Image 1 (cartoon, rainbow, N blue to C red):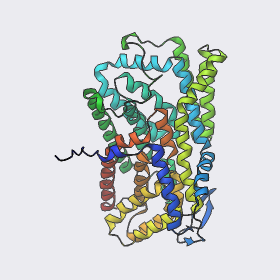
Image 2: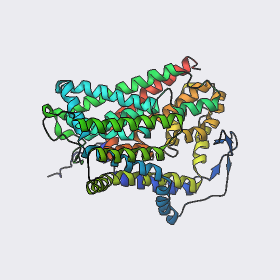
Image 3: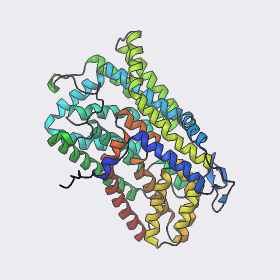
Length: 467
């Protein structure tokens, strides 16, 4: 009698746990420091920012990372990631106070009651585009406080936390990554290329809208699937405490106290927007506003000191795994710096592009930026490190500067959907309690579809001499 062989699992079900995945990348980067030569580009300050000098790459004395330094990179990564780690905690504390006041639950319940449970698909589409617009116009980490609201909304209409991440994190990542007015990628690229700021916006806008439409369609499709077959939910077993509605939809109303809490939250967001666009605020200032909103919400909700203290600690305990993952992922960047192989990877990828045909070179340039993005997850940092090399290379290949920047934006922006080294992605996923291994299983088909559309857009850009 032959032995029964169980059916092999699909590849996406073999994705390791996020902690295991990141440790594997840490080990891989450590090994690469022994294989790849150490090298560096010369850098000069332009408008206060360090920019690569083209054709200045040189090899330097190898600096391989030993086993002690590999593990030492982990606490050093936490040190470098402190601002992002704390904004995860501050955002969780703020949401903890809003959840304790019942303002979020009552608001979402009242919204769903008003729109009607028969319009669930419409709610998903509208919210996907709203979150996408936040990514386009406001930024990325700036929107971290909005993620838990999507979690409550998704659970209220019968979805799960994975759907919540698709509505919020997926849409904001796409909106920000493909935004025609992204100051970190397009803005920095146009400065380096000496092009009019945010020029060529029409093609980028069409690509961004198309990608968000794909995300909205996929969210609705996933929702229909888990409604018919709950056992296929990727969110099974995830902690939903404090995010679910506690009573029937028809009983929800927003109280006067709830309106006060919501008003404080909205005022806080407006202050953040003003600070980001006018005062150059970043995550530390955002964290401070989140904490101020939390304290004010506690006061207007008449919480005593003990209740407020317990709310803080409960929120921190829920956010701690996500905060840990942010610091853990940042250790990869530290290892790259220790081994001095980041510039080596950029240089060798640019060399590989030199003998390719015109259309293939545009797509390959985007693919190379995707690879680099896993090692330099900062959009502006990647622009400053690679575009001074890629822009003259693109012109020598027959690509306009606008096409080179578009290829860079596609490679950087779309790959951020699954980039485990991107602190903002890990932080946002943690706000809706979704581990990155389950997220990758959900979002990978979207990533492949949008990449295909983006590459077609690049081909059209080359054919029309996009400039």
